[in-house]
Structure formats: C-alpha cells, structure tokens
Amino acid sequence: LPSCVTVPGPCDPEDLIDGIIFAANYLGSTQLLSDKTPSKNVRMMQAQEAVSRIKAPEGESQPMTEVDLFISTQRIKVLNADTQETMMDHPLRTISYIADIGNIVVLMARRRMPRSNSQDNVEASHPSQDGKRQYKMICHVFESEDAQLIAQSIGQAFSVAYQEFLRANGINPEDLSQKEYSDLLNTQDMYNDDLIHFSKSENCKDVYIEKQKGEILGVVIVESGWGSILPTVIIANMMHGGPAEKSGKLNIGDQIMSINGTSLVGLPLSTCQSIIKGLKNQARVKLNIVRCPPVTTVLIRRPDLRYQLGFSVQNGIICSLMRGGIAERGGVRVGHRIIEINGQSVVATPHEKIVHILSNAVGEIHMKTMPAAMYRLLTAQEQPVYI
Image (cartoon, rainbow, N blue to C red; front, top):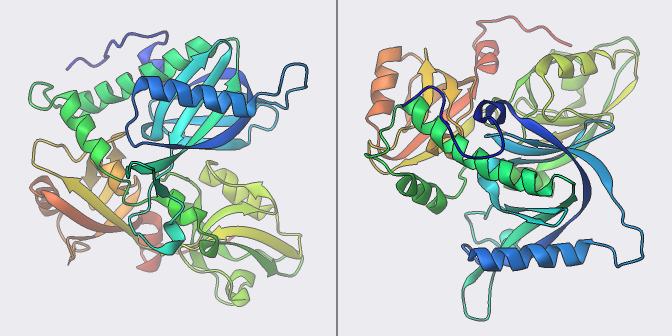
C-alpha cells in the first residue's frame, strides 16, 4: 500500500492524523434512546430532536460556550476556547453519526454497554415496545459557520483512520475487506471500558492528604499509557512514611483525575509532575482519584489469523498500537509491560517467543499488563524519584 493514502474530503489526510481544530460554540448535550443500528434517516431525525431540545426558542438568548473542536483519526475532543481545558473526549470509534443542519453540528456518541445485567447497569439499555433493545446515545450540539466542513472532516477522518490501519499492518484489502473488519468491530463491545469503570461512583472519590508545608507528597507517577480512553497519570509508588502513604487513602494503581481542582486528564507526564511539585508549600491537598488495580486486564477477540492484532512488542513492552483495531478495543496500551498471556507468565520469556505466541493466537486472547515504568519500580530495576 502507498505510504500516503489519498482519501476524498476537505482536509489533507496527514493533517487529520495529527489533528485539526475548528472554532465553534457549544450549545449543550442531551441523551436519546436508540436502536443499535438505526437507518441514516432515523439518525437525522434523532439529530433534529437533539437540536430542538437544546436550542433556545426564537427570541430567547441561547446559552453557549466558545470551544475548539479537535478532530483527528484517533479522537474528537472539545476544549474550552479560553482555558483549553478538555470538556469532552470521544475516541473516534465511539462516534455513531455526525449531522450538519444549517450552521448547527450534532455529534452523536454511543454510550458503552456494560457486559453484566446487574441492577447497577439497568439504565444502560431498555427494551422498547417491540421488544428490541434500546441504547443510550449522547448528542452534543454545536454552532459554527464551518458546520458542513466539520461534518465532512469527521467523515474523512474515519476513512483515513481505516486506510492508515491497513497500510501500517500491511493488510491486502482483497484478503480482508473494509466491511469484514468493520463488521467485526461493530459486533465487539469495548471489553476494557474505562468509561464504565470511571463512571461508577464507588470507584471515583475525593481524597484529602494532610502534610507539612515544605513537605513533598511522596509519590511516583507514571502515564496510564496511550490507548487509555481517559489518559491520565497513575500512582506507581509511594514513599515510606510520606504523607501519601501515611494517609492510608491512596493505593498503587490509583489514577489521579485532578489535584486541587486542576484536571490532569490528557496532560503530559512532565506537566503533571510539575503540578504536584508545585504543591510543596501547601498543608492540605485534594486529589480526585479513580480506584484501579495496578494490573490492566486485556481481552482481544481475534476470529482468525487474517485479522492483524494491530500492535507491536519489543522486549515485552507494547511500543505501538493501531488506532481502531481489535487490540485497542481489547484494552492494549502503549508503554505497558506484558505480564501474562492466556494465564502464562511471560515476564522471563524471550522476545521472539512472545512474538510467536501472539502471532499464532486466535479466539480470545487474555493478557495482563502494567505500565512498564511501574513494573521497573516494583521489581527494583529503577530507584523511585518521589515528588
């Protein structure tokens, strides 16, 4: 396949890979119930319903927020135009439909369905009168002079993402058609669904750490890994006798969403470290955390060997990941060390054997991984530098 794929649309494909930004006004969001795969006509009716709910009646002032709409082959983000704080972050694969109606853009995103049928998850889907399962759809409504261009750019981003996936994996389109691969992805739920885990109130909490002014918090943080739906930092180690450990309120593996009201989601590791270092002269620190085990459980569903896994490994560490592939769907993250494959430890397994195991694995592939930096700390290969 060629190194640069030409895909029809208003943007340069290479720009979409890096990401482009449109100015818009965010008007609001609403939630609709929908069949799993409605027709385009039904989708447009749903978009119009969302607009009617959000738009202020004629003659009344319309509440709105100026935003930057970031579109790439990986995700769509909505940033506050003034503060550049992330307001929304949707992986591209979760976008079901994009509609432009005049100067209005409606972005429709699926809410992931929990795999269990427990009482806690009963709101995720509802049976309709004809017995079909109904699913929740989040509709975000924007206003922009570039409404049509925005809609076309998102459509082009889907095409570029797929072509890049094929090109990077060396897949011959004649061997595996776009429809075959799309059909596979459409039948797969997100197994490792951060959004469901993060949305459960029992997993998310505010923690207050008391310390002396001039004293460090006493933690080591590492990146959660590219491929995380909510990329942030993880507590990888705590200083013995330090404020974080003494509080008894934090665990290794906890993901820090914000500190003293400042969101860490999507920020580079160095920026997050600087924010924590800047708290040295404070006597009380508030962290919003999500309880997560230090080990990430991965489940990749691979029907047969024609379906490329879509990630690469070097010495047991995941070093690249293809956007929108079955590996990303299963929870694979760049920068993670593979600990187990199908119940067998691969910590001491040579690189060539790991590649052989993965290359020949089909069906359900179960893996356990953790951030490589955390693994090196826990196995004393590196000395912790506390902040």
